Amino acid sequence: MNSLTTSKARENILRKLRSGLEQAHLPIPFPEAELAPISQAFAGIEDSLEEHFAKEFIQLGGKFIFCSNENELLQNLTALCDAESWKQVLCPEPELLQLFHSARLDMIEAVRPGITEAEACITTCEAMVARTGSVLLSSRQPMGRIASVFYPVHIIIAYARQIVPDFPDGLNLLRQRYGKELPSMINLNTGPSRTADIEKTLVVGVHGPKEVYCFYVNQ
Image 1 (cartoon, rainbow, N blue to C red):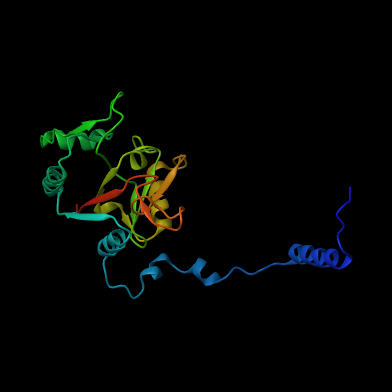
Image 2 (image 1 turned 45 degrees about the vertical axis):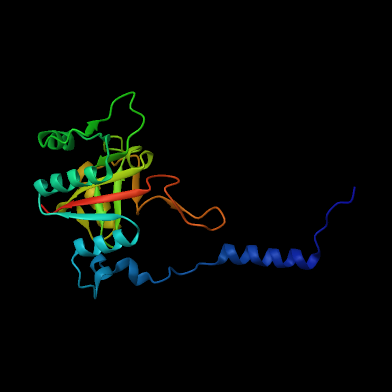
């Protein structure tokens, strides 16, 4: 059997590369970005955080519904369920369920063993990131690992106090809420599920919901 040999020239080149990598100390690109306040990300942008989030969220394929208060939220949610002819919508969060049931939204049910399918699922979120139109979710929410990926439609109920300029601000909200016991999973959702793995053709709804709604309650 012939053994593979490495030429002397090739070995010299590899040795120089290894030596260079060990000795290299590359500077951090754009170090000023690390020190700049996060508000500079919105320099020159005239929109409010809510408007900027809505634009980015819609551009990513999400559907944004502005609600002045919880009464308007209930009206808009009822109109959506009627328009889509949804018969079964699940919600794992007790506070939201109490709100929905007080308004007699009977199509919205609590998550129970044995219910494996539903047309949509409603949850809150940890924060909204205005810069990218993303939503922060975590495992500390009821069904936090499942609700946002298992059902064909994900409906997010968010309040004005939850919107932040950028990711570090969202993480600060989590630290304020949970202290040192941060959730074991923090998920950054950016629009409906989509992939272009197969023949570079964009397909929506393969690995998660095909539609994502954000009902923004301005209170």
